[in-house]
Image (cartoon, rainbow, N blue to C red; front, side, top):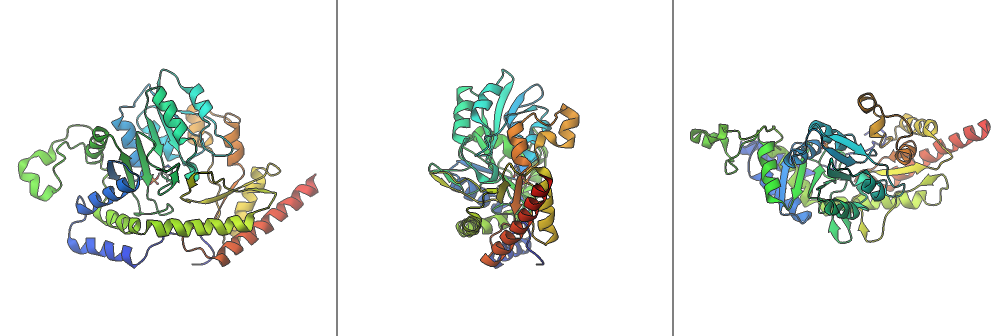
Length: 392
Ligand SMILES: *Cc1c(COP(=O)(O)O)cnc(C)c1O
């Protein structure tokens, strides 16, 4: 690899072997590996059921659909997330109602969530952004008190634990994503987990074109019965292939090593960045075992978006992967146009989002690469300091 990428999947011989085995087996979709992968994620998150889907986004779409959320309904969610969490609400024709975040956890401020609840609120869609689990418990309490479901978008937190509970165990249903930059990958893929059998059964049907006969697993053999082509509801093709599932199983078998490798990289960054006045480092809470998704630092209030953008560009010019995770969803061109949002609507989310810098972060990162990324960041920061002082 030239330079240091922002992220990089961790694929070993065991993943390659697992995928090759599927290719040789002749069964490329709807088979035993999907079921095994579901079981592994459900066990890990202490849930009764896992439903594998083609992406995290598809998982969120199915959960909202299965809960019967649709036009006229409101779903409370965060403006500081990857766009998929809010888009899924639009897919079902409901309205995302954003509430501002807490500057420490970077997740929705629970007090503001309570204020935003109306008779039209049909769910809360909470995100564990960067794997931060605080507030999910509180959001579950608020949802419970109002008798509405909490949907947990834990796409960034597989394997994390908070107060002895795994991420993915807080919502009525929770959704993971397995894009190549996540803790584990299936290329593309996702997983719904829940204790609600009925909800899981509806999701199983919805991901498979609305088929109702759950006993059908082998289209080739069951075509004669006719029920393979009986569709009870409007469904989708959101299945996860056996190839992707095999990759997921091989990654899950290594999950503890993967999480440890990521903790080590995060610890190296923390040690090297500690004491820099200009930076706010990620918050780790008491009673928490963080599953690290990305390593995001925040510039202090001395800096603004212009400086941040120049720092990200500067890092990239030196072949150091960097990004502005995440631009606020309500300020995305499409949301502005459709809902008329303007700057200043969610000031905390906006202020945070203008100052974040995601640094290279992946399992195989060693001390030398961390040092190089930190050193380059330091040079970029010093340049901005000089520019600020000159302008002052
Ligand atoms: C990655 C991610 C998703 C969507 O995952 P895909 O598998 O890419 O569809 C949803 N929400 C959040 C917060 C994510 O980080």
